[in-house]
Amino acid sequence: MALGSSFGFAGSFIWYELMTPDPDAIAPFYAAVVGWTIKGADPGQSGGMDYRMIGRSDGKFAGGVLRLSADMQQHGARPLWLGYLSTPDVDAQLSAIVAEGGKAQMPATNLPNVGRIAMVTDPQGVPFYLMTPVPPPGVPDATSDVFDRHAPQHVNWNELASPDLAASKAFYSRRFGFEFNESMDMGPMGDYCFIDHHGQRVGAVTQRQDERQPAVWLFYIGVPSIAAATRAIEANGGKVLMGPHEVPTGEWIVIATDPAGAGFGLTGPKGGEQTTIRPFRCGEERADTLRAFHTVEHRVQVGTRRVRRHRQDSLLGRMIAEIAEGYFSVFDSAELVRGFGSPT
Image (cartoon, rainbow, N blue to C red; front, side, top):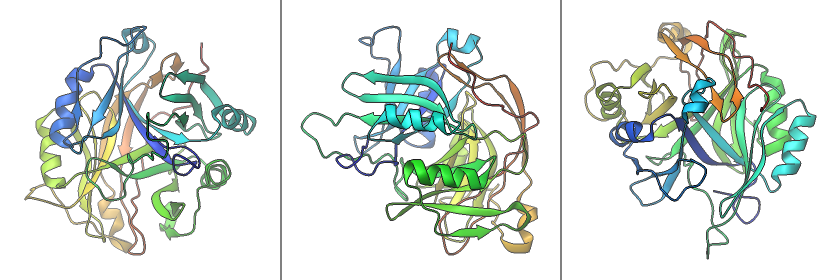
């Protein structure tokens, strides 16, 4: 986990969290698809909390898993991936975001030996965490490595389809130092605006294509073989929503849900043979590659933060330019996610 000057760059994605009702049940899925290890619950956690680390094969961590309790689920909680953005002062950042029209979904809270966190939605209703981490003992200059543009078992790309592209660009530039130096013209779908952060390209923001489309970050995890990972998704209870598709850089991508319904992306080389793989096409042929309609039912809540149930018919498309390593996705939902409710 990273922070300000001593933990890397403020505004970085420093942690990723999966919220799911049964970590024991979901662990074999991510082991088969990504190679992660999610161990059993720690009996020493207090207050009925069940939080587990996602282990990589290099012995470090890719993120965490929060078990959704029965009470959370009764109030509408459903599986979801969320990202943490670093800040040197959670309280000041939280106040500034609220002053700009965002909402505090979870107040600033101290986690012993971990750091201070808060959960917010930005002025466009996009949820994420803020965090000021505490460095590990004896490692004051530690930096987060949960994001890596190309490494397997790390998140490789962060993508947002915003309700208001211009407003999101201004917000994330102002609050987190995101730079938008290049964009790709997607024709009638608008610009795909690449995010540069302290010299590294970390993702992209684009305009959502329908007001009913939920505004959330989509995280792409690196794998050594998209073909093998796709087979593992289907063999272990997940659902492939889009792809696999090849992009001009030679990488392949797929979008899926895990057995509990949490959405995620994968990126990496093609790998072994996969009969459902279709070549990715750009330019005037793009319309033929943007047809993958699926239905996903889910409700989203973190703790006491609630949103109403919705049914999502997803149109998922991918576009990429030769000049940049980015991905594009469109979700067309049948019911608009209006935003997270206030804490109770």
